Length: 284
Image (cartoon, rainbow, N blue to C red; front, side):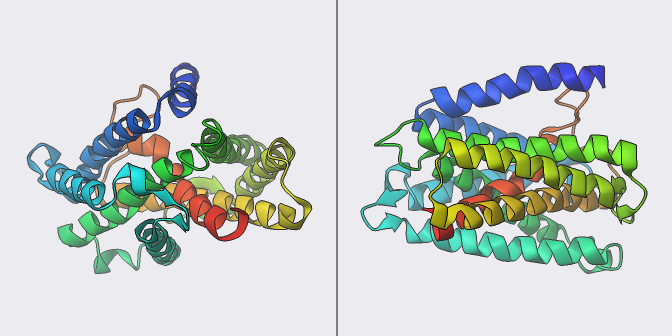
């Protein structure tokens, strides 16, 4: 726990500084670096010998293609968000629904995908490419009028996830009795999940005041926050089934006390794209 806290105290300020201080192009490069590190770890889910896996190159190539098709200057225009981004986020929402089915039916669902390297690689692309683009899209919201507004939105999603994780941990330790997903992550409990959701809603309440959310949008703001909190737990559980199939405890060892990059961003890979979609549909 001590090592986890020390690492978190280093990572959190770095993440916040990156969100608010980096110009958009440099923020995109920062996020791309996270994407590539996470891709390398996903390669270990696909192939136990990740050092010789082509997954990292494939993921990097796909990212480069999307950057060519969707230059950062074209994310927003007078008519709104670029259609490619919006359609991609809708596909992402569909992927997380599929992921929910995979998690809910695991381990029975395992044989249908676990033996296929191509399918596991596809799952990785559906998880990481939308995460990259939604980070950049959310950071760029209203950037020409208020440089920090998109950063505040992105930090709000981070705080939702951090509050949900913290609340789930302590409530699970104190009150946890009923397993949430025993076949996927035996340590997680329904009581912990509820405690995490309550913690996240406290953050959402404070954020609604900070953002001065209009009265007609307050309900949708809390619905968006609750959906985001739910899918953040799904992101965690989804990564767990891939680690289980790969017989890995952690996705990597880059972060002392925390495991790998994927272990730290697993909840965010679901939360950021889904919140970005709800923001575009309901709150923009």
